Amino acid sequence: MKKIMMSAVALTAIMGSMNTVSASEKGIDIKTTGQAVVYYNTAAANGTTKQSLFSARNDANTNTQDNTRANFGIQLNLDANLQNGFTFGSQINYLGTLGLEKNLVNNVMQTTNGTVAENNVADDIYLSKLYIAKQLGNTTLKLGRQELPKSLSPFAFSEGWNVFKNTFDAIVAVNTDIPNTTLVGAYVAKGNHNGFGNNMSSFNDLSVNNNAITGTPGVSADGSAYMLTVANKSIPMTAITASYYNLNQVAGELNAEVFWGDVTLASKDLPLGLKVGVQGGKILPEKLKNTNAYGAKIGLAPVKGLSVCAAYSFVDNGAVHVQNTGGVKTPLYTQLIANQGAIKSDNTTYMLKAAYNAGDFGKIILQGSKSEDHATQRHLTDAELVYKVKLSGINFLAAYINQHWSKKNAGAVNGQDIVRVVARYNF
Image (cartoon, rainbow, N blue to C red; front, side):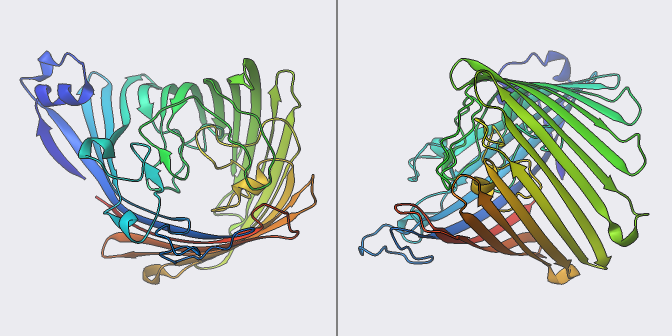
């Protein structure tokens, strides 16, 4: 982290419009942090059309690569203490390709102009954060474009799996007056939706995407959301989180209520690093079928560096999917890198995970899930091998994912292989 001195004139240029005459004589400390990312992802689908993982040309010998994506990005955070309990935060991003689409890939993980081609610098830059926060006793009020964590906002949260996280235009109030309790109230208006190839500079209504893998149609949620979350740790070794949402414009002009809860038992005093969690909730859309979901997990750390976990989730065939309205992931314990399409609606899923931390040699994760689609009785097996290591200050991630459906489905994807490599330098 570094500091630079910025005059009121420069700060006003960043913030758009703000009277900082009183600060012009002293200047303002701007804390700068950021990251640089190179992201590569390739997939080979197994269905009516065969594809290759690393082929620079497809089966027709044209210049189109098979489901291969890449990005190069730079992110810069500028944060300041404006005095009198006010703070300011901003985040600017550059998203490019380094010209990889000309030879190695045919698409991107994220874009800023809705196209793969880089036309000019202005098309490759977008503002992902811009907010003012005010501290009022034990309450923090934050207004503007910001990240929302999954732990406090399970149905509208910032996802970290892509090049950069998605953010939201929101008003958020956090209060800690009650001992061992955090109260969060939020109005969430729009988000830039994390997903494959999404335009990150475009902020739109919250939405629930269709389930492309299973073919379940789903229902869209095209409005704002009001949220209230209570997180409490009064009970020894126990963390309880309960959230309520009111979603507007679900399937047209209807509203939907969401109730979701999570209870986690964890402590260093428990034997073998035991951790236990249960979760569940209900989505109640007007005039449509309710969605019910629940899950459980148990984790152990039997020896130094090794952790294991088993999880279970169930979602019925309600009208609205159990899914982040600002991205593609779910709040379910069984969520892995790429299995969200099979677990968010009308399914039963089992998950196993083992992770070994070898210190300077990195961390190896082996995880997998098996999901049954209740409507078709098809089973999706998702097996994932992940390796993480930090070298010369750079965080590297390499992942291989194999997905396979137990039954063939004419005209649909019956499985796929995915390879992902990410290099991320934080400064």
